[in-house]
Length: 345
Image (cartoon, rainbow, N blue to C red; front, side, top):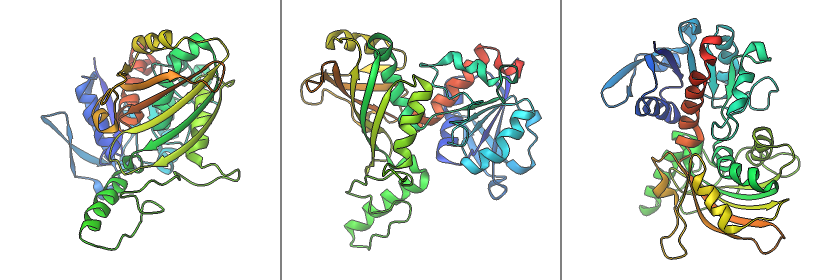
């Protein structure tokens, strides 16, 4: 017997990627329901190569008619409809930041903390809601997990170089339109981003906080602690760059235990969800262009950090629409099915 799966925000960039990923991974769905705002009702979206699903209005849908709901329609929509869906017995997997830091909502990356999924159930103090982490956090913790298990990470310094798709379809459209416009001498008018994104780098993602960090940088610190270990200290600097798909991260870790570069490399090679492509020569590393459309977190440029006693540096790239959002959500759904969470809800 299969499952009834609803995708909330099915017409958006991540929603469409969720539908594609469900089909590609042959998720055991008897029915897939596409939900969006009433203005999108009646539109058709693709599910796999052959199937077309007609969009239904979210405000008219009864979540008692779904077993699992993948939400990617923004925090305000999740806050309004997520608890209603959970109360109806539907397992909610939410891609927004609405519930990530709630004590009764587990924040999950299946390769890192799969056992936390039991905290989803009301019998374990949950609300039938699971949060998907920020896209930049998701790929980072996949890379950190094997190193933390072996060497006990104490501090992480990370600089991110994030694609415009992190701001949705509108972000990608703005990069495209600005790039095209510059070549014909059109005036650049930023709307989605705070400054010109074409041929530029903007050290500002999300709102500024009182301490000078942006909320994106705060999310990486807080979410890494919740997913992995409260003892890990992390500082981030998040930058938007003129790339359509694929987040990149320059990562520096310091560990409590002595580490070996060769052993660390082997551990990363064997880790779930990680692919090491690291040759000390031209083209011996992965860039955002090459990771687009791929499921893995790619690690390159692994080397010792000589500035601290137990330090390691590496480069990390991943498709933010897949591992950072759609794929991780579907993997959580697969984990919920494997652990029988859906039926218990």
